[in-house]
Amino acid sequence: MANVQAGQGVPQTTGVAQSSQIQQSAIDVDPIAKFQLLLPTLKHSLVNLMKISSQVLQQNGFTDGGRGKLSESPSPQQKFEKSLEEFYSICDQIEVNLRLALETHCEIADSVKNTPVPLHGQKLDSTVSHDGQTSQSGLYSQYLTIVQAQINCAKELHEMLTESARKLGES
Image (cartoon, rainbow, N blue to C red; front, side, top):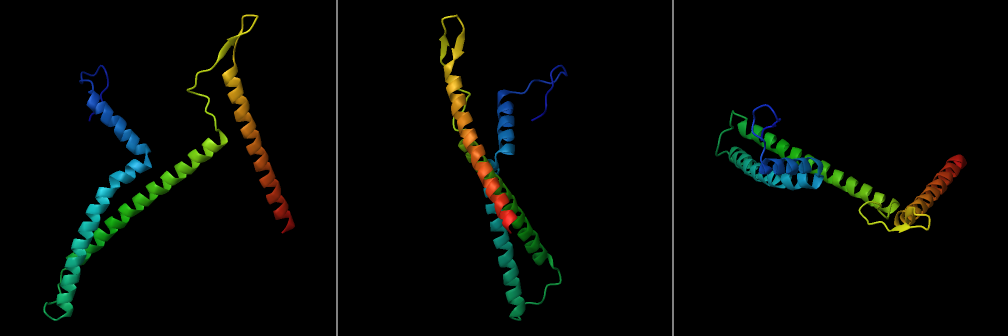
């Protein structure tokens, strides 16, 4: 995919290229999508690690049993260490993405808790008063619900902070 700018004599991107750019940007943002992309890589890395470790164990077994001589090239051991580092690296990437997904989930849950009624995306009831002015009663009632929930949340926070300050003052 090439970045295309209008007026430079380069053909415009196709719908397929644009959709793949959108999918790539979604993967860049979504930690679960990144996790799902890392799973096949992790599987391949684990298979490779097991193959190399079996070769190292077999070579060490022959050497310890006296049937083989000590290899002067540390190549199998270096391959094992490199493969192990690759496996750990992929595991670390997966851990980071899963932690990010969990943190995102917790923040969304807190957001939903503190703003239970979303204001956008709903049709508002418009009424015309006797003087010809229109009012949107749906928006105001939703607004009151949200404000009341936020006031309750602020009260809870104030009580927690007061209690914490009192406990700190006692100790």
